[in-house]
Length: 261
Image (cartoon, rainbow, N blue to C red; front, side, top):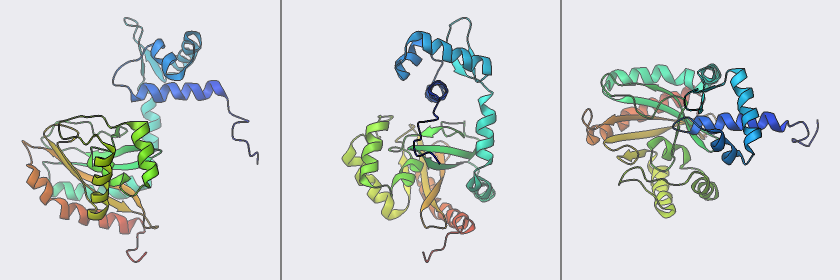
């Protein structure tokens, strides 16, 4: 086995995937100039890479604006990836049972993957509008219940790197925006085993998250219950934590967790 991982690396293929990563993280379409700046490549190379992605069907171009977006074809990849996640298959029946108790809430599941808090599934409330917590989206670690619960056991050096790489954007007046503040918050989350977001990410939205453990005793996922205040008050979201914990424990045991580890 060759010990040099870069020996067989094809740079143009790598850059094409970097374009898909970049475009999928943006809130709207991107331009050739955006791509060139993000990847530090010239306009000609960006155009050629985008042309290949257009021909493959993984990106589309708006003829009126000249801007590019990720196409629906990429959903095939994300769908297959989500279907292959074992924790999702185990978790969803339990979340459906919990949703029957709290039909006014949204129930969410996420994992920590390569520095991202990635939502892998969700059950929508009967009455709440769909929010940012949709499958395939990434969440900020510093102001969401799932982000906090999935990063609370990381070493301090890794937290520092997250702060450096992801930043600590202020979404609401309640968002924690300092390194000292989030480290103190994560210490509290680690002790209580509950990640809380009280109007920190979305104004008027409250969320509580708890960990799911694997057979090695480490956190492998997080589940959360969230609701906008007109439908469930913050006190109701807080009062739902015991049931949320109970569900997480059942999922953990199904995943092979042994409390005696």
